[in-house]
Length: 85
Image 1 (cartoon, rainbow, N blue to C red):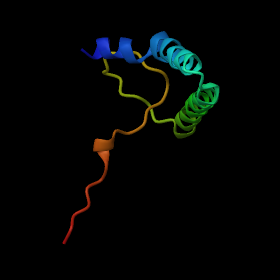
Image 2 (cartoon, rainbow, N blue to C red; image 1 turned 45 degrees about the horizontal axis):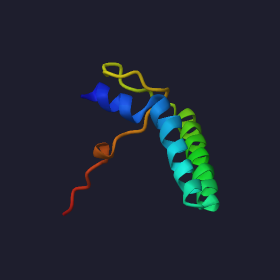
Image 3 (cartoon, rainbow, N blue to C red; image 1 turned 90 degrees about the vertical axis):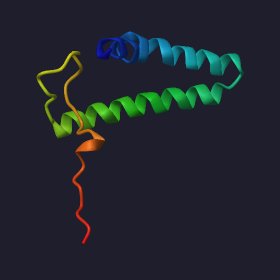
């Protein structure tokens, strides 16, 4: 199941095909500013994530099913629990 979701949410499909479809839909609906904002937001978020991953440098686990890119962020479940009095 992890491999299926990796194929759907990663690679060329997620990086090129889906954004191209979104941009085409905005242009088809005559929303060029929305298409431009989408492109700027997508590129800015990708650059920010890459920069943060390289800055933090946390390695990914070695026993995983898929082969992702470099770097990892801790999952939301790894937060420290605070004990309340």
